[in-house]
Structure formats: structure tokens, C-alpha cells
Image 1 (cartoon, one colour):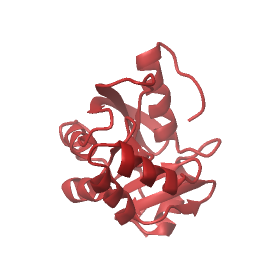
Image 2 (tube, rainbow, N blue to C red; image 1 turned 60 degrees about the horizontal axis):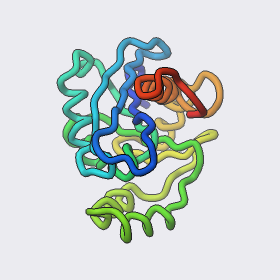
Image 3 (tube, one colour; image 1 turned 45 degrees about the horizontal axis):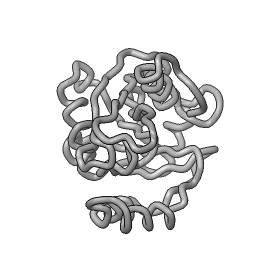
Image 4 (tube, rainbow, N blue to C red; image 1 turned 135 degrees about the vertical axis):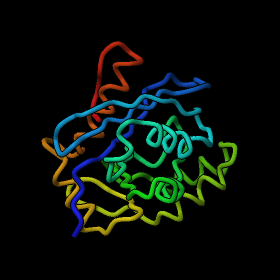
Amino acid sequence: MKRFSNVIGFDDSPFPVGYTGSVTVVGTVYARLQLNGVLVGAVEKDGLDAAENLVTLVKESKFAQNVQLIMLQGIALAGFNVVDAFYMHEQLELPILVVSRRRPDMTAIRDALLTKIRGGAEKWAVIERLGPMEKVRRVYVQRVGLELEQADEVIKQFTVEGRIPEPLRTAHLIAGAIVEGQSRGRV
């Protein structure tokens, strides 16, 4: 079974209710448990550009040759900018692991996408294609390009304390600090 030692974890920055525009996205680059770099980009709130922008961010980085797996803090960034994990997997030829602290309310997400969000039907189709979230250790995951036991090993390997793997926890803290001047809250 392939083990993954070099990963990038992505999370978005906080934004106020009613905000429109670009939202900062942070990627933390890890070799095992060592932070080796940070990537900073942006995606449109509720937009359609998350997967494409993350692919560009990774491909144009100096870390592109070494990365073995991409982690996402949830399947959507910047509100409902749903990340097409299949597109990312195809473009980067890397496994994609979506991680969530708790099981999302998929009915509420579907209803919001189909009734309130431009392009919601296409976004919901991407989420549906990923299939249901699977419980792995103390989190829920969706995955493209890796087996469930590999996902379990990645969560185990990169989680030091709590539930969330370090690349995602660190990305969350940095993204919050960029916008608010300091990190806050739980991951």
C-alpha cells in the first residue's frame, strides 16, 4: 500500500456574512509532520473557480514535483465554491482527500445549492459524484484516487492532536490570521 509523506492541505479564510468577491485560500505543504511551505491564492465566493485555481496554485509552485496528495478542508471553499476533486485528480494526477470534522447535512446543502446558488445543480452533481462521506477515525472523508485504508493511514499519519490532520489545521490557522490579524477558533 502506497504511503503518502508529502501533502498539501487547503483551507479558506473567514469572510463576513453578505461578503462578495475573492476569498483567500491557503495551502500548507508538509513532508511528514514538517511544515515546508505555504501557498496563498484566492477563489470567488460561491464561484466556480476553486478546482482550477487550486490546480494552478499547485502546478506553479516549487513544491509541485514532490507533492503526493492533496487534502481539502471540506468539499467547498469560500461558501459554495465546490471543488471538483475529480478535475483536480485528473489535472494533477494526485489523490484528493476531502476531510470534514463532522458529517455535513447533505439535504441542507443540496437544498441551498439548488434554490439559492447560481450553478447549484452542477455543483450538487460534483458532490453527488463523490458519493457519501465515510467515517475514518474521528473525521469524515471523501476521496478520489486512493483506497479507504490509505485514507485512514493518511489521517493517522498527519493527525497529531485532535481530529484534523496538521496540513489542514495549519492552513486554517494561517488563513484566519491573514484576514483577521490572528488565528482563531477551532479547525
